[in-house]
Image (tube, rainbow, N blue to C red; front, side, top):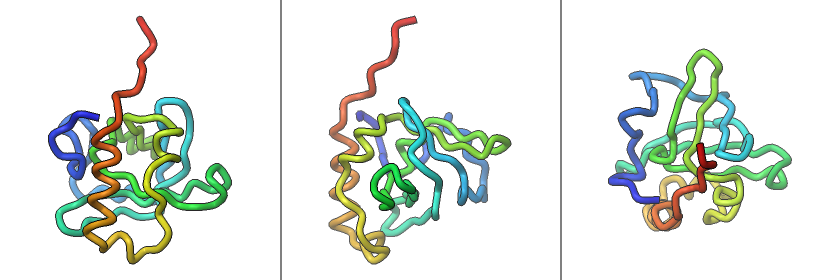
Length: 123
């Protein structure tokens, strides 16, 4: 997933200053992933912790904000530029302390940075 900084929102994401994304539905290119449990920033690495509900056996996933391709404040949705399978295969998020572990965050960033862009249907 070629991008300058996976830990920063892209210019066209629709993020409004001070926006609270907690509770927003998170949607990948191929379906819903879950909802934003919380948003955080440690070591300049901004990310969302997404509660996947029963989709991934009730676990949460950590998603760098650079994957956010769109935010619809009215509909309360956050759209990601990846697939459900790519999120599911990301480094496992186990405890909140990992959001403050520079090495863990770097491994998550490396994983997403190496992903190929999702296949887009021909128009």
